[in-house]
Length: 95
Image (tube, rainbow, N blue to C red; front, side, top):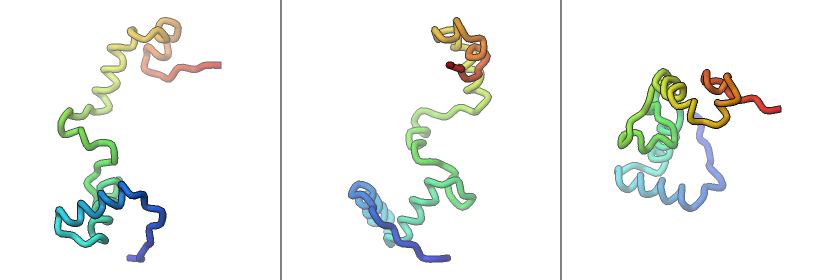
């Protein structure tokens, strides 16, 4: 694998990286690899993306469940009154 250099790492991310390395007993390199893999969709990663950290507390929906929910609440939207596309789960079009 080719080595890379990270430039412009902000203080918060660097602190998170150092904390992870210390907490897990990892080198900074291995901690950085773990962070990158967990944030990517790579097969060797966890499959999670950044932003899913609270999923374990609140759960997740399948695409089908989301579509069903969107359809069920579409009539709440004032836009849905004027746009049959929104009521059917399609994007609204504005000219």
